[in-house]
Length: 198
Image 1 (cartoon, helix red, strand yellow):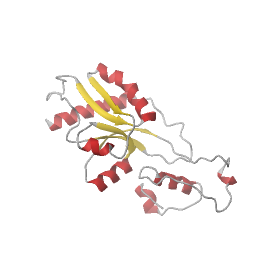
Image 2: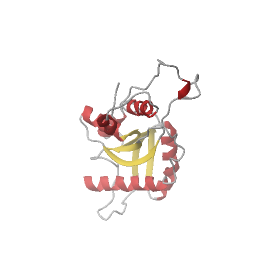
Image 3: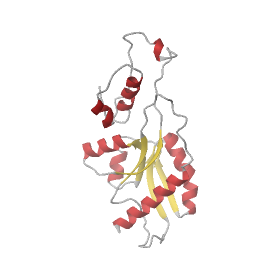
Image 4: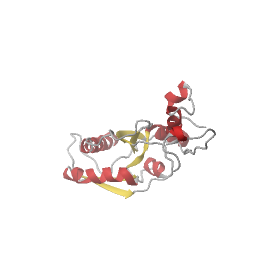
């Protein structure tokens, strides 16, 4: 039964991917360091109803999840009607992922979440001892540098102070932007690991 439930969830994820395949990353800033966002799922309890061994739905499939507000919830809202036509009901429990979202997924309180990239998911699993899986790369989000004082990096004076996020999702990405603009150099192993800190 566990394999059938997981197969059902994978079918739902594939339907999600098909439904949003028109999303493009062509508007990404050239200097942005980007990673795919993830739909994380609990491997052992991914749907509240299942399909029979042939893959034919025996009842409506309901999946519950937490997604970030923009653009994650917008993408999910776009595919909800398409999945409903296939007998899959998606219930968005919250549009505010927080530090407990992965734990709620791992403990089966929700079936999926949609807010993180793969390095963050891996780090969270390692630190917390769970085994959430990446159920599918969905989209990429650009990250870039912003200033209300300077129009370009060339305008920055020596010894400027730059703020970067220190969370597991974005610290590496911010350091890569600084590297790409010539402010710092990451060693090769760090750059390849998709994980770096000050």
